[in-house]
Length: 229
Image (tube, rainbow, N blue to C red):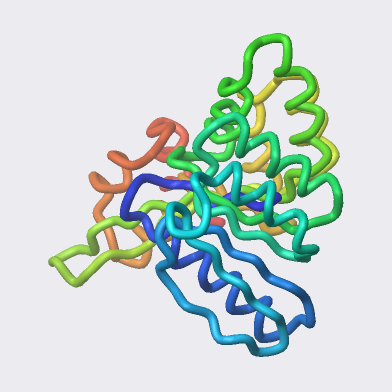
C-alpha cells in the first residue's frame, strides 16, 4: 500500500498518474484504476490497463474494489479511500500481494496513519494497526506553495518509507513518534516536510515566512535553517 496525501489541489492525482505511467512503461502487469472521475487516460504500453469510473461503472469505491479483486490485477489505483469499507478492502488487497495506490486528504504520514485507524471503531483498531504495519510501504504528503514573485507553484513534500522500526511504532500505537523516525531516515530516502521547506527557502523559491506557515513544527524548522546539511 502506497499513499499520496495532501489537501485539495496539491497534485495528488498528477503524482498517482505519473506512478501509473512509470509502471505502465516498464512492467508487464495488469493495472486497474478506480477513479471519480477518470482524470488521465492511459494507453497500454508494457502493461495491460483497465480504467473504471465511480458512478458510471460502480456505485462507490468499495463496490468497485470488491469487483476489481475478481479481475486479477497486479496494481490497483483507488482514487480515494473515503470510508472504512474501502480502507479495509484496500488493506486486504495489499496484504494479498496487490500493489495498491491511493490518496487521502491528510497532511503528513503520522496524521494519515492516525486518520486511517480512527475511521474504525475501537475494537477493530488493533487489527487495522497490524494490517497497516505489514502492508503499508510508503506515504508521500505534498503541498503546492506559491513561488516568490508569482512565478507559479512549487511542491514541498514529506516522504515516509516503511521500516521495521516504523512498523513497530504503528503496532504499538506510538504514531506520534513517526515524525522522529522520518527525520532520522533521510539516508534511506525519507524526507521531513520541514527539510523540504528549508530546501525551497535555500533555493530562494519561497520565503522564510511562507515556509514557517506550512511547517508542522516551526521551532524545529528554525533549527534546520541555522544548520547546514
